[in-house]
Image (cartoon, rainbow, N blue to C red; front, top):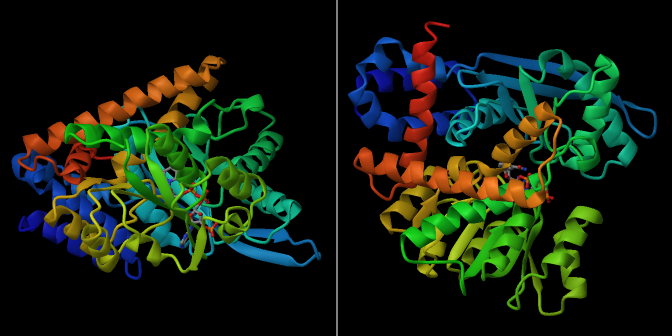
Length: 446
Ligand code: NDP
């Protein structure tokens, strides 16, 4: 990057956000790819769009006290970063994980702005969560935490203001508890959260949306290059919401999914992961992934996460967490014949890993585009709530497929227009950015 204006803004971002490497990494990645747009658009520079777009509209940090099952008072920290609402109400998930701090929430909120723009739906970007660790907590503890979390957060959100959803550690159970508390506090039923249960305003296919959408996007990318999932060996990191439904769809599209992981380690099953058993283990029993081997003698378990990337595969779908593929893991993928990496998780590849994909001609589906199916169907859930109407699974899935197709086409044509044909990361950043920047420009200095 040589543009003086951009270098200056980036320097300020580093100075103003010390100790937040993930946020700085996310901003740097976007800046490096939108330089040709900034070169062409002096009006964006005059309006100082970049310095405005890297500063969240607001950041809320709050205390979350709750009682554990022994009657002890526990205290966690809650966050909501409302990043940008130029194109629609704030929208983005809530993450419950001990690694959560403001830098993680800001990186996720920043990414969400561009991702939501790519979906073509009117949604701004936000993210939230807490350093609460749901692992090992009883149902009642989870409920009390969620109720306390919403008791503060409810005053900052609203169906036309900010609509949170799930992310790591937040699934249908947690959304249910949060929704119940919001309703009790306000006395109002409104579509304030997405990812709700089907009987009370949830959308069919929302559970599957991120994983399915990832495969639809990847399929578009593969077929643009004469390849497909059919007969391909696939590895998937994670075994949560995104990973599970990526596994199901990849298998439906003809792939052999041979490995999945959790934060403890990974299982390798050359016969192909038994999706129904894996879903039962992770979604219903909430067990650990090594237990899969107890019922599947063809599978083996290895402790530690990074080894999964050394398993020979054609396609790698990273669906666990940020920076899970580093340079070394990316090199192992290349050496073993992998031809495509597509991201279900947010920012799962380090900058070194991305450089290795691009240098070696791998097809690379960046998170902002590839995992946008989740928020897209959340947008469709909001539409259904507003209409007081529910679409069938097939209707929602059909809309999701069309959206992912459009997202791929937008990435493809933006990359081509700015001289980076085939670089879908650049395409995603450019296409997502231009729409938000144009909207900010039109709305004046706010
Ligand atoms: P879940 O909580 O359902 O699953 C997360 C999975 O990743 C689990 O297998 C978990 O293992 C593993 N994991 C979490 N943290 C780590 C870590 N630090 N190291 C190694 N493994 C880890 O979350 P989701 O499936 O919803 O989210 C996964 C990723 O996808 C995240 O990056 C999220 O931001 C992104 N995403 C999610 C969307 C959604 O709709 N849910 C939408 C778009 C993106 P364990 O159980 O051992 O913790």
